[in-house]
Length: 304
Ligand code: MLT
Image (cartoon, rainbow, N blue to C red; front, side, top):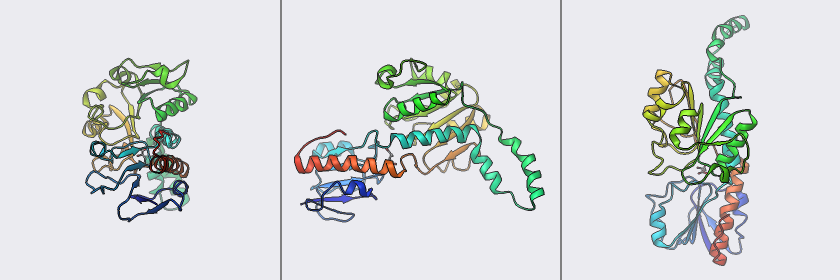
């Protein structure tokens, strides 16, 4: 019998891939063989010596002490691509929220009260402040050309946008398998200088921390929009706030909570909802549960 410790709620569809006659699964369990985790931070956790494998029900693995686990010979699995569609959909929502001032308009509408005539008058006076812009012809720069970046790029093209992409390790042609319209940026600075929107789909590492800083923001077209559905830290938020205040940046949409950003009128913060759909949670849980089962029960390493 293999014991699996769950550190977060893991979709039932995934847990069902670990048959009860071979796997005992609980949120508290002594001497676990495996761990299933979503967002719980494991860096300061006392990970029992019995653990042989960890399954992360998501793409990013920055909540797991990878180096320590690899020294101990613990296998770590993740679910690349399993939540890509969910993230793509939220990136599209983020672009529209920013371009059409939806958060500001919603907040304004919620503050309206009184008689119908008074509300109509307030709407006529107030809605001019929320005039937005349309997406066709605008350029989206996609940084990170993995599963999510590809979906975001294609979806943006379907909306009539121009798309350019940059990834330090793979070429646009091989990543996107797209023949027309999509262009490769020769460097991150090239992409930055040409993009009305930039969407980030790279993990947070020492190389990507603050990859967008004051200097790069200054090089962007005026009125550009930043979309960070990856990780807090990729953008220098102090620099972003200064650029929002000066009007250099039009908006900043980010999928993480932030004390610095949350009250800024041109920022929309979300509580890391990119992968929070039923479908994505199931896909991720199934993918990592299958990997854990294959590894623990059969000694096989699967990468999908
Ligand atoms: C990911 O890395 O795929 C996301 O952080 C998943 C999640 O929201 O748990």
